[in-house]
Structure formats: structure tokens, C-alpha cells
Image (cartoon, rainbow, N blue to C red):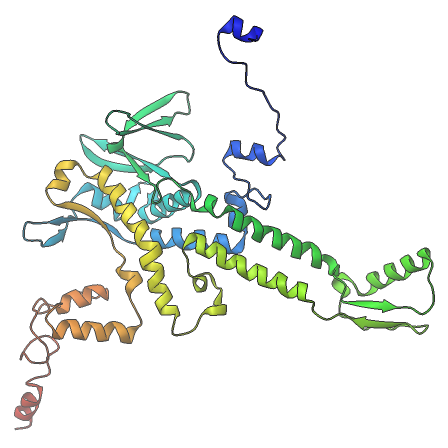
Length: 409
């Protein structure tokens, strides 16, 4: 037994280690994961890497563009927008006097992509929701009660100390159980960064030899260096492409593209696929059109909506309903809906063909169609009558000829 254990009755002290800021082990202390490639992949590095940055922007911008409203469903299953509810006014406009709802949704989604979780505080006055404020990233500590399994949140205050808040007053967005898609994709992003750095250093100032300069005879080290410096000075970097004049029987032999160069390009394209797979984004949506065709792009948009966007939509709806609606309101039929109708719209011909089928089958009224096209309601547009068979229905052509005949008489 050591003297430390005899005095303090515990185990020996843990060995203290010093880390330099360049050490990958130190980066984990700041929440920046070191990838298998050795590159520390944080938010800044990911945004500067073209594919990862495009995926982060695409997902966060898409979620930020979706309208969010509160609806009321009655016992018959009919629903109507609860436009007078305080939460609907916030989510449909400005969550705070200085922040629009679209910006709030975008920033929260981006934070959840990077950190795995994003938090916002719901401010109530006399029980009514008045503001929704996004909390600073890294300022929230989450704990779960061992008995009730109820989560509690501790907000770090600028003046010191923490403020304990209930789950009913904190919006927690964590679509993957707290896992960060960025951190899970760190190795793929890190390798892509290494490949970009390699390519940049290889082609910097024309450093990659485009050919071999052949000089007859044996050259001394001094002569070889003098010729090399003169050649690079005349035809390297910004002077690349100029016409070369070689004297004394010298010749220049161009080098063809090697298999290593081809594999480098293949590796870069592979990393595009790997990063897109990690974020669940079809490659064509981040401008990688090597596998895109006119026929499959529309289908890939649908796949993006169903497999990438919808899980985020469901996570958003659940997080908002938990905090901006009371249990009594949810029991009374109030719920939050994030609409994806705008993403589901096809081209003009496809949309109007679908509208025609819905109108003929009595599924949609004329005003419902006009609402989807952002057109004002028509006084006679609330009937489900088939416009092709019912005289006088909006859009009906029956009886038009009779009117013309009578006019001619």
C-alpha cells in the first residue's frame, strides 16, 4: 500500500498529462473530433470542405424554409389552423422581435447537425408563450432524473452559476438521439480534406512536373540547378503555357496522365459519395451530377424528402409540441405541423394534371387548389362538384355552347 493510500484512504492520484494545442488528444477537450486521417474536423473545417458544407447548408436551409403552424383537430377528424394561438403567431412569423421563425429553424437545425442537440428557451407570461429564444451552443447541461426519467436542463449564466429549467420550457432538437451527423462523418470529411491539401500542394505554382527536360551530356550539380531554376522561372507558375525555345540539342518530353492521377480523382469522387451518404443527401443535390439524369433527379428529390427531411420534420414537430403546447392543449386536439407541401410540388404540368384528377374525383375544391397555388379564393370555389359534369360549377364547360347558341339567336 502506497503512502498516498495510507494518508487519504483512496487510490493513487491520476497521472496528469500536458497536451499541446496541436495534439489531437487536446482537440477532444474542445469538442472537435480528430478523424482517422489525423485532421481535426470541426464546424469550420466541415463548412470549408465543399461537399460537407453543401450538405450542412442544404439540410438546414431546407428545414428553415418549411412553414410551421398550430392546428386544431375536432372529434370528427376535421382540422383547422389555430391562427389565434400564441405559438402559431410565433412559429408563423417571428419567434422573437429580432429573429424570424425561418432563421430560428435554420440555426437550430444547423446546431443539431454539428453538435447532435440544439436547445431553445420558451418564455411564458401568465402561462402564454411570448418568445422562443435559441440558447447558446454549449451553454446547456442535460440531466435525467433516475427515478422518473424526466429530463432537466441547466443553463449556464453569464454572471455565473446555472438556471434549472423543466423540459416543458426547453425545446430540445435531437433527431438522432444526440448523435452528431458531423462527428459521425468526421473520418470521411477528414480524408476529403487531406486529398484537397495534397492536390493543392501538388499543383501549387506548377510544382507537378508536366514533362522532362533532356540535356545531352553529363551536367554538374551547379549546372543542373541553374538550368532547373531558369526553366521554372520562365515557364512555371503564372508563366505556364509559354512557348519554350531549347538550345544546345536539348528536348522536352511531356508526361501523360498516370494511373496514380486517375486514382486520385477517383478517391476525391468517392469521398463525395461517402460524405453525402453520411448526411443522407443524394449527390445530385450538392451539384455532383456524374450520376444524375433528367429522369432520376426528380426521384432523388423525392428520396431526399422521405429519407432525410421527414425524420427532421418529425423531430421538430415532437420537440415543439412538447414545449409550446400544454398537455391539456394536446389532449384537446391541438398539434404542430411542419408542412412539406412546397417540397412535394412537381413541375407545372404535373401539378395541374394532379389537380384535375383531384377536382374530378371530388377530393379537392377549387379554392383548395387555388390556395396551393397562392391564388385568392373564388366565391363559388368551395364545392366538391365535378366541374366537367355539373352545370354552373367553377371550371365547368357544360352549358357554354347553349349560351353561345342563345346569344346567336
